Structure formats: structure tokens, C-alpha cells
Image 1 (cartoon, rainbow, N blue to C red):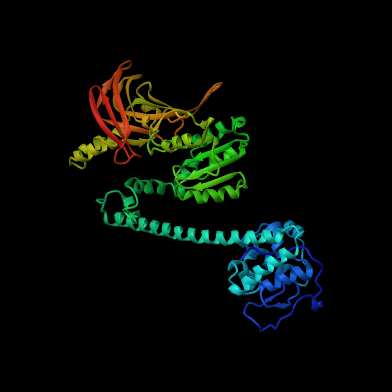
Image 2: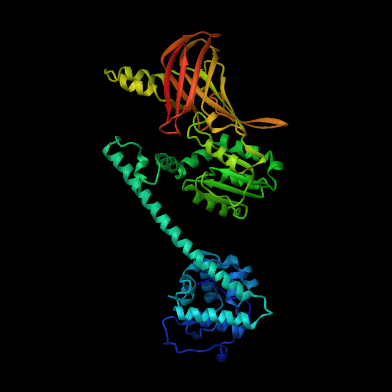
Length: 539
């Protein structure tokens, strides 16, 4: 039924047999003994009614209004009272509130009395008594309200809360069904991947197809996204990002150094993950922060926020940014760590732009708000040997077909600064405040000025992130090989053949970077160097 507990009342004397309406102990399976005296009652409802009428001990008032208990809180308090207040007078709601640190522990989830009907009373949402009992209870409530026209309508409030609890129970049942379906999908995915690993059968197109239940409902992009979001459900990837001190401290610093922009503002964290940026924003003074994440990590984020006592100022929503309904119509600030390899891999920026256009007020701000992509010439003997020349002679055999495959894929590596052969060249700049998704694909000419003579075997790509305001411009962080390494590393595009260069030479080229039509979260990059074009993928 509803949440239940106990409030202030006069002292109960165990010899006061007339205080309660005694019933035959063998009358019913739902018999309950008084928490304070041990006297028997026919049902929890009869007992709680007697407590209120004869002793002013209003279980409804305490549970629903004074302490706002959920089911688990109710169970803990009942067991606490049975253990600590037997043969004693009932405590007031103020006393119970002051003792919260004692009864809130999970030890009090264990029943003091086995099969205690008082514990089932709330759990069963009224099913302890039949429909006739419930009708009588409702009639009694209505009668009480009618007989007390000048009262404070607390019983009316209880009726409303009772109906709300019924509705919540139904919603909880529906959610349980959805969670079961999601669990089944995860099990199917695990089984599918185990088959791939054990049998080596990689001929099945796109593993996320294992999540399909009704092919008439979902588009193929949604299957791709299932795999994408699935990778962010495990703690390992979040540990890697959080332990990237360049990344995390940069966001912390830019938020804390701009506290005046966050105070009393509504903030949206797109792709919130563990909620670290949301918590930074809350600590900076945000009025409320809404964090959105589609992956299962959202559930852990909810726990993390609560563990840090920020659940009154941070709300985590699980779902796609494009599908979630925010409790507010507008936000003042959007924060997001949306960058992928070579900046645009994973296409998460598209979701940030969607949120910007839907919720950000005209005078709102984005953190970060500017970024750039740069290219640089590099050479590393070990990388060339292990990725390119290795396939020319594998224990005396040629494997040129695999060499071609390696050359068609960008390699993500943390380069040694000594491998840098040229000055960098910016090939693309993005103003997150006004760019459109269609403009994220780009083409550009570039020129790389060689800074030392030697062999030139690859071009590396990296990005820089900025927070620009009218009064200042700050470089948040850089993923250049000449800076402190980050988990993004650099994207390395190996040339088919290395070339000798001299200091002062200028290498001219062109780049064409766009989303893969078959998989919009991956990238296709065309690089032309000295009139020779090579095609690469980042996927």
C-alpha cells in the first residue's frame, strides 16, 4: 500500500489492556503484534488505526509527510522500532529524524520478527487485505474527511499520495519489463561475441546486429549505435578517460576558472558518462545540472551523484540526446567532452549541436566552444618497421596484401616528440557555437615546412581545444605529439613509400575528411602528398 511509520504519542503502559482492541491470537495469518507492547491485532490496518485513534500515533503522517520514507526506509524504521522501542514509549518524528544515522543502515532491512505483516503491508500496496477491506478503508478515509471539515485535510492528502503510489507501482512494473528485455539483449550480444571469438567467424556483417529483435522496427544506424554506446557501458573506458589528467583537469580548470558564468545557471552535460563534468559544474555554483547519457554508465552516474550528495542539484537522464525530454525548456550552458580520435571520430559533436539548437538560450555558452585540427610530418623507424615494412618479409614470405590493408587504416599512436619532422599546419577550425553538422566534413590544402633533414614516412593528425570569450581566449589542451600525451594520442597516416626531405623543404598536399556513409561514426580520409593520393579509414 502506502509508505508507513510512526509518530509522537503518549507513553504506552504495557498494563493498559484497554488501550487497544484485542483480538484472538489465532484469528488470522495477518495478525500483527504491537511494536511497543506486544499486544495482538487482526491486521496492520487495524493496528495502525488503533495507534492513531487511541494514542495519537499517526503512522501515515510520519511516513508520508514528516520523513518522506520510501519502502526500504519504512522497513528499516519498523525493524528499528521493534528492536529499540519494545516496552518503551513511541518516539516522536523529531526523535526518529535525529536518530536517522542509527536506523538508516542496511542492518535494519533484516526483519526482527519473521514474516512480519507490518513489513508486507506497504510492500503489497494494499494486497494484505481484500478488496472489501480496501473499500472499507477508503470509506473510512472519506468519512474521516467529511467529519472534519475544518481539519487540515491531511487525510485527503494521504488519499492523493496513495493513488500516486499505485500509479508509481504500475510504472515500476513497466520499467521492470523493459529492463528484462534490455538484459536479454545484452545476453544475446555476449553470446554472439563469444561465438565470434571462439569460432573466428568474422563474416557476419556488424556485430551489433545481434541486438536485433524486430528488424521491421529499427534502422541499421540504430544497430551501429547499440555497439557504440555499449563500449561506453564498461568502467574500463571511463577509468582511462578519468585518469587522463590533461583531459579531466582541463575541464575542471576551465569550469572553475569561469565560476561567475556558472553561478545560478541551468547546465546540460551531453554524454555525461560518470558525471564528472556535471559535478564540476555543480561545485562551480550551477543552479541545476542535467546529465544525459545513452550507455548503461548512466545508472552508475546516478549512484555517483547521490554518493556525493549532489542529487538535489544534478539529474542524470538515460537516453539519446535526440530523444530525451528535459524537465526544462532551456539551458544556459552546455558542457560536453565529445571529442574522438582525430577530433571527429564517433560523431558525438552532432549530438552536442542538436542539443545546442534545441535547448541553449540565445545568450547561452558552450564549453568548449572552439577547436582546430592540424597535420604534421613525422618519421619513426620502429613504427614504420612494425606497421609497413614488416609485411614485405615475414619469416621469408611476402604478405603484401596485409601491408595494403594496414596502409588503408589510420593507426592511433602516442608519438615521440622526436618523430616530428615539420611545423604543424591547421587544416580545419570549428566554432561550436554556430557550426552546422553538414559543415563538419571538410576539404583543405596544406603545406608542411620541414624542420629537419631525414626520412619522411607518415603524416600525423591531432587537435587543439579552446575556450574563447570576448575578453580572453584560452587553450584548454592540445593533443599534439609535442605536448603531454592524452588518451586520444595521434592519428598516423603512413605513406606508401617514405621520402627523403631536407630542412626548409615544403611538402604540399590536400586532405578530404568526411563521415563514412555506411557507418557515420567512422571517418574516411583522403590524403594527397606530392600528387599521390591515398585513402584511409578511422573505424
